[in-house]
Image 1: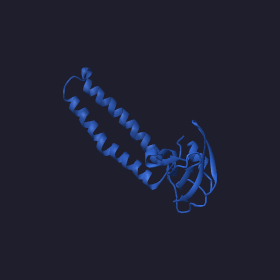
Image 2: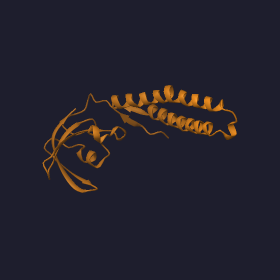
Image 3: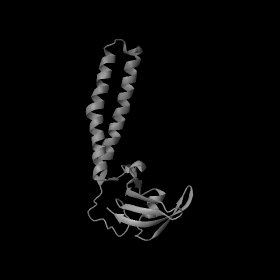
Image 4: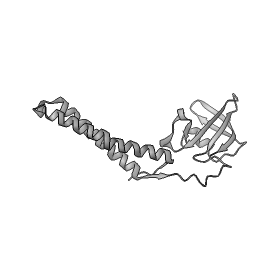
Length: 157
């Protein structure tokens, strides 16, 4: 059974672009490698041919998996998101109570999380702790490093 995954418009476009690259760039390149290796003679002792065929099998599995993901992808409708509480796609400014440091994160689906881009998953400990909170509330979040407290400073989209 396939699992439904939720994406932003940007995340879904990135996924589709990657699938197009796999099909239109990488697949023909591997086919060309197989053809070149086949032209070198005896296939029973041709390591290049074996490696190219193995790479083709791996690529085809990846393409199949990506097609399944795209087929089961759903676009998150952000037009009706309420900014009074933290939800998926909210841009949240939080302040660490213990050190006063402020951070801004966007809450996204698990498959789009990227800490470098300040996108955290709603399924992460911090994401789960922030969901449903309002400005001024303090989220107490159990992390592997211990209990952290974050005050919600601002919520936007």
